[in-house]
Length: 202
Image 1: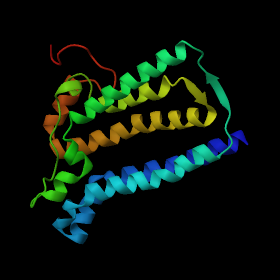
Image 2 (image 1 turned 45 degrees about the horizontal axis):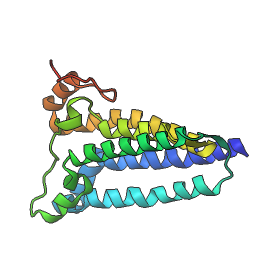
Image 3 (image 1 turned 180 degrees about the horizontal axis):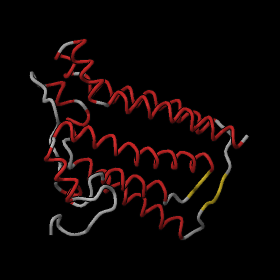
């Protein structure tokens, strides 16, 4: 039963991640633009985000509905301490998200402008001065320091870790396509996930 759970969760997650990455690619966006016209730029990002959220719901159902096995629960006072650290890291992830062009990220900028921008802004401020994917980094920390771990959670966190690592590679290929040498120079100055706590280039 345990192995079947792992296969079910991994199979759906792989399908979800592959579809999610494919729809985010410049090739698919270019196809949508050629097929439906330039006006698709107004709704593509928002539609993509809504579709990604909706199609992840079956995974949440599987993770909670499939038989599970508790691996550990931290005792007091470590339970409280780890929860506090976890919440703090999630706050940092939220701050990193706010340091992006969040309206563009959600797809709202494209929805309300007469001529939506073809690309967002290359963000190199805040946490992005120290690592290229701070939201991924903080999310991974928040996941893995969980005070309660079950087998289904472990599989889920392992899948997300793999997805963030592989997905960041494809994401950066897309960003190079959007920003060219500006992003290549950013890659040379700033590490991917592990922060360098000094001014880049210093």
